[in-house]
Length: 259
Image 1: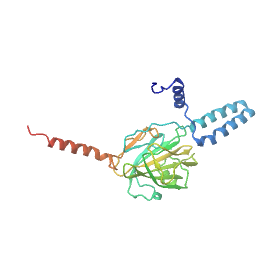
Image 2: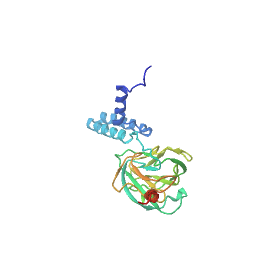
Image 3: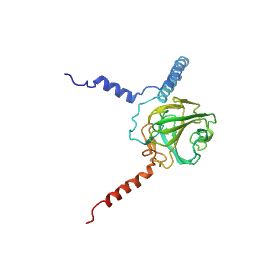
Image 4: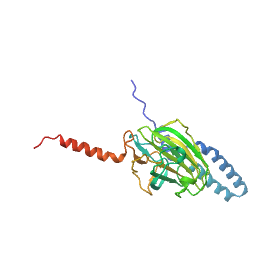
């Protein structure tokens, strides 16, 4: 009786290749051939221009890379929806177009440069209860007013662990298109692909009330992997967990027999 099949050298080579040469996002197949064709024309015009075209074609393929990510499986965690760095953390009301409570929540903003992976991911497991696309300006995405004035796609997410959050894909100074790959009513896994923004942009996450961020301004993030916060069980704020642990400890000590 033969045992389970063992991965061969070919499988290991394919895995290693995908790690260093991730596949293109479908959106990339619209642009890379155009860049390649332009490169051929540039070579025909003047060889040095052709080499510039080669560099730009390679950059285009690099921009549209879509690597696999390993999302932590612990219930209640909220992960970064994008590669980049934490631009700002502070109180702000959710986008009014989502119809949520207007009370300020902690907003964590992740800025993506043109060198970052631009495939965006769901920050938590849950159900999409509302999508809203707002046409607007194309201010630099690192400005605070970009959250309210720029073109954006806002998503309201009912968390599987209880409660809800909002996240917003925001177009920037160079970005001119937001692609959405989800629909209202869709159930998402944490880290699932939700769309992408071209070319350089920002994603805001409005945490559930009472949830404290576990990241700091300037920290690098990996979309679908970096933990932004922990929402706890059934919507319980992470901040209440130390209190619960202290309560359990006090109860246990109270049950100890007197010396």
